[in-house]
Amino acid sequence: MSTTLETTLAAELKELRDSGQYKQANELQRPQSPRTKMDGRDIVMLSSNNYLDLADHPQVLAAARDAIEQYGMGTASVRFICGTMTCHLELEKKVCEFIGCEAATTFISCWDANVGLMPTLAPTKEDAIFTDALNHASIIDAIRLSKAQRFIYKHRDLKQLEEMLNSPEAKGARNKLIVTDGVFSMEGDVADLPELKELATKHGAVLIVDESHATGVLGKTGRGTAEHFGVQDADTIQTSTMGKALGGSCGGYVAASQTVCDYLVQKSRPQLFSNALPPAVCYGSMAAIDVLMNEPQRLEKLRANTKHFRAGVAELGLKTIDGITPIVPVIVGETATAIQMQKALFEEGVFVSGFGYPVVPKGEARLRCQISAGHETADLDTALAALKKVADKFPESRA
Ligand SMILES: Cc1ncc(COP(=O)(O)O)c(C=O)c1O
Image (cartoon, rainbow, N blue to C red; front, side, top):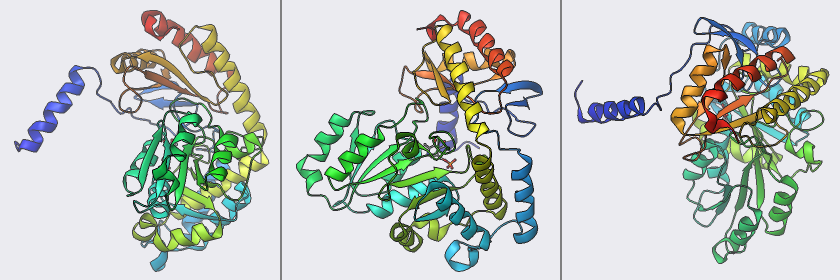
């Protein structure tokens, strides 16, 4: 084809290739697991969100099979027409039991949960949304779909947030939402939840926390950021995913009051116009929550592994962001460097994904290492040895 569009796209792709920024998808040939097979090579997986190693857990798989037997492949309908199955109601009840919220509404992904939530609660220019500059892309796009006034505060800069909340435009706004990631996906740091709640209460705003990287990870029993800080309350709205710690398939939810969830069911566009979750995802995710609640040792292992790996990264003198979560970035600077380092690590039998602009700010490209409860100490030591070898060739990755 030789349309103008094709020519423009081909030129941009060439530019990405020439500048070493072209992303190549690797082929995973076994289930997602801390040791798996990719592109014909046995590797240590250090870049998946499979934090609790539940993606191929026998109990999760058995539950998914059972759901297919009982309910078939899918709903062939959106929820409100004829796509609400018993398994959806059971999953929503399980999420409430797990999170301790009044109600929950599921979506096909957390992306959809965010896109279905923020524009629905703050649709007009009389509304205002306050958002951390490093919030996930799904939050950025969700806010773009709303006509509300936008206030983007610097990452975790609560002083700037308060100044924005005090601005005359914000003071006169109708619905005010403060939106934050619980755990920031590229930094691995944790939102300042107690202070954010205080600001929300003081300024009559509702706090929305995207718990995608916190669910099953933070808090004594894995219930997330609120549990971590001991500040659970009924007013804060949570979104999260089943695509990470909770079995790693797909699906998301909004956990909130009954009123908010009832409103979403009536008004949220992805809820009204997109199919409901496949039954296998519902039962598989429910089983993942059961395993998490019944096997606290997984969370302990995840924490011990994270501590071991973070200590190793510090010892190697790599440029990182200190913290407590299993997202451990190694900052390398240029996107092309991150991609070259990813390739070199793969040659050493370790898969770590390199991220560059626009996923992270220009000049802050990084390798995002992610730890799982399923890693053995030997896996982490293999990964650290590989990082040392590769960092010796790329000194810009050192602090
Ligand atoms: C903070 C955050 N929110 C939302 C999502 C999207 O989740 P899902 O894959 O369920 O759409 C992600 C996925 O990377 C994420 O990191």
